[in-house]
Length: 431
Image (cartoon, rainbow, N blue to C red; front, side):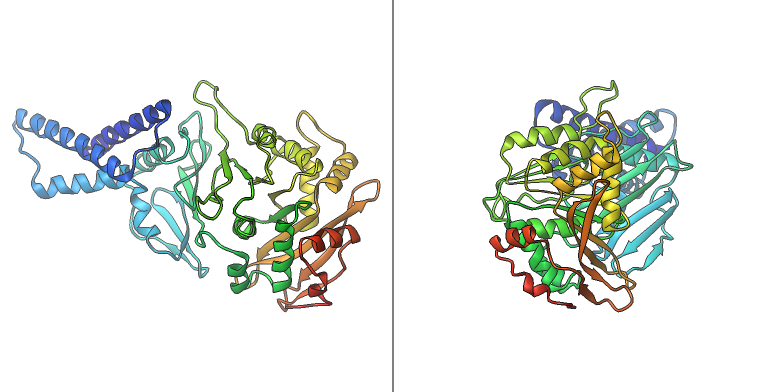
């Protein structure tokens, strides 16, 4: 009971400070500042507790008991608390809790560990910790309560948290880490994600001012990692606007890529006010004269319609979408264009896609668990019903060999040649 009460007092103080800083336009409190504020509240709360115990004939907490309370409260209130020690292991890619006492750790070697240690004492403690992170640990303040039972947010660099309560049987979460950090196409080539010819093709796409790309694949296939590597090919002076529902690409770099805008969707407050959708940000971004417009992920019509309009107007762009294949990615985008207020008939949607997209790069995990590019597909034309495609390269899942299936269309060959790409590197097949 004491730990719960003191933790709540410390978290309340930190959350109030975070809210006030947002209102005043100040940066979030650094970790050292969080610890200082937490210790101040802890000291006051423990003194008050001792006074109450002495007043009722009890005894003070022993130094050992007091230190135990301090350690536990700080673990639940400052930084990432109970998961920080796990994240100190660089092989940890994801931490998933299906209940407060059922925690699983996924590592980069493909192994999964069911933790024996109990990180939270109860469902209520886990719920309070997640709510506290929502209020204090992101770029924008978020809510996680019975009115807002779904949470998705970025925690620092390279961490993304998704959490659920009320609509699920138990409070649960998934915390994913980008283990590679800032990467280049050369790095991914060395890791076996793609052959050299595909890396050269992608580098030329980013050098061109005439190419629009879609990266597709299932969850955890490496889409964001490959997007980061592709963006690293841009010149330091390239003007880039990155729009995400939850910021995680971390592309801005004051030395390597200083001319970058990074925007994040803002959710409505408890009164239903103040929301700024990623779709509305696309329209605003076009006024920032971007050389490249990056839309983190198309999930619905709200993002698909403005993003595809920008692509159709010739804006060099890239985005990602969850799909089981390259053709499936186009079908998914057509489905999104067919919903919402500006819904389009299927054939009109496919014609829009034909005008908007040049290549779909599809990723998946190989049989050994590695993330790999399994297909590069060119959007070739429109047959009156749907956009037609031309599979340039594909990966044989049985052998791991990547082979060339078709030559690039003439207009794409010319665009890429202007960007320094010689399509003869594709050859008739390569590893």
